[in-house]
Image (cartoon, rainbow, N blue to C red; front, side):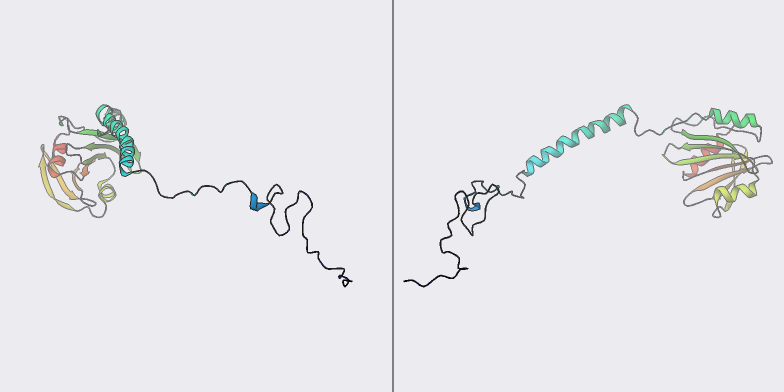
Length: 215
């Protein structure tokens, strides 16, 4: 006769009921054994690009060709490199109608000169007419005519760096040559009822040409 088995002893036969996976084997999502899951693992993704240098060069060329065509169209047909010009006549007429000071305007400048700004305005102590130009060499020059007293106007327009360098005769008028901010220089005409300033980073001959054209 065999000895009695303890009541809490686990039977050696761990055969599961029908339809259940064996004990100790993890079950899959649908209850089947994970060990027999027929779903194949996803393929490994390689991080290395399969595009050759030739393919990359062709792609870059395809992008650059339309950009080059647009740039050529912009410059050739729309004047992309040309300065934006304005008509100074309305501002000049407004200044003459105000009769705050005698108004002069350039006459006989070459075709290489472009008017890029024009404005008349009243300010504290007087009024200003500003005309901005682009010279044939592509430099900026401003022509200012003002009824503001010169002792107040010059420090503002030429800054503390503005220092007189001596007189010069242009078209029968005596102008004063001044230094100005940075690499700029200026020609100043002092009259009883107005002050004229021509200032910019243009060469001396271009400043003189503009001053001599005033009528």
